[in-house]
Length: 326
Figure 1 (cartoon, rainbow, N blue to C red):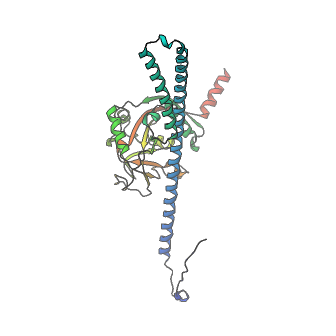
Figure 2 (tube, rainbow, N blue to C red):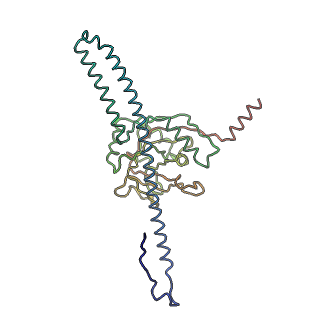
Figure 3 (cartoon, rainbow, N blue to C red):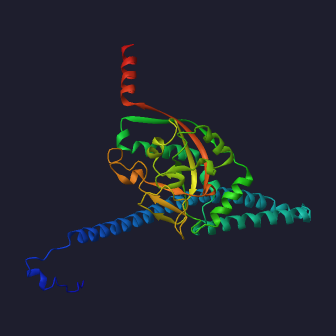
């Protein structure tokens, strides 16, 4: 049930000289529209985070199940070896028998520990995401195929240049992430930059991001990332796209443009914006053009540089015709 309080226009309605303030009504409607849009954006961010968490947890569970199976096989082998030697234990030295018992006990402890970690919601580890390069390649091609404007174009990753960062750099990034409002919100995204300074990409995968890589964008001065590969490709060097593990933390939805912005609002770690390519002619679906902006270079850890090429369907058809003629 809903209750709407009564209101009255007063006795002035019957007055011929009465004039409704149309401008004020339009401003109120505009304010209501903006608030509704902000609420929708906040729900979209929440669902996106939930989806990333589900994908990450499923990947982690799969990896730990494989570890459990491997440990179980080792345990069975150890039990079998121990049982075969059981009849001859009185021939074994006491020290060797104690060592076998200790090894068997440790195998049981490892299996139990992995079962506990699988059920828990432990934080995402950088290594677990950085090693899945095959999955990253497939995700890139899938993201490009889903873009309606690229239906007749096929994309192939020709090579991957893995990031080679020092342990000190990784420790600094991890320390920064752990000090954020929401350190667990980390996800693989594509770097929307480097178009005007391609030489910086090599430096990024060797030393990490720095303030030299900041973009002077319409939503602020920071590092721009997108979960959509097509958006990042339009803002990157043709044929090259940098993949990074980004900690968006507690993201704030921002609609207003501000080139002077150099930090998120208090209590937030990053901002989610409509995107610099938010144009109906380029992207009919505004969500595709969305970008995340971070203002600290230690919030992103480069994973690798993908080198790709594209071919159109017409190229394949011509190639098929050429072979058929021979």
